[in-house]
Length: 87
Image (cartoon, rainbow, N blue to C red; front, side):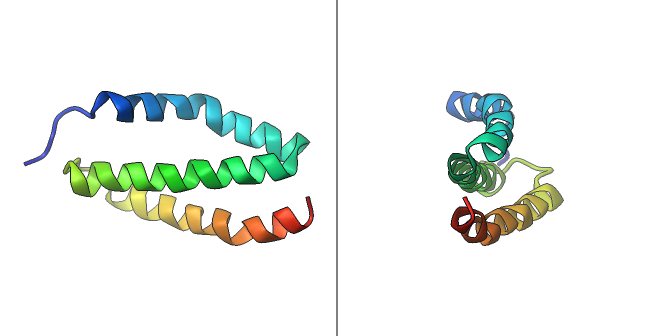
C-alpha cells in the first residue's frame, strides 16, 4: 500500500538540499576537498532516502528519476578520487 505523505524527517532532508546542493557547488569552487566530500555525502544520502521512499514506502513516480540519480551518484563517486588527488 502506497503512502500519501512522506515522514517529517524525510521532508526536512529534502528541504535541506536547497542549502546543501548550492553549498556543495560553492565549496567545489573554493575548497575542493570539502566540496567533494559534501557532494559524496549528499549523493549517497539522497539516493538512499529516495530509494527508501520508492521501495520502502511505496511512493510512485521515482522510477526513471531514481535510475538517473543513481547514475549521477556513480559519476560523483567515480570522479571523487581524481578530484581529491588534485585538490
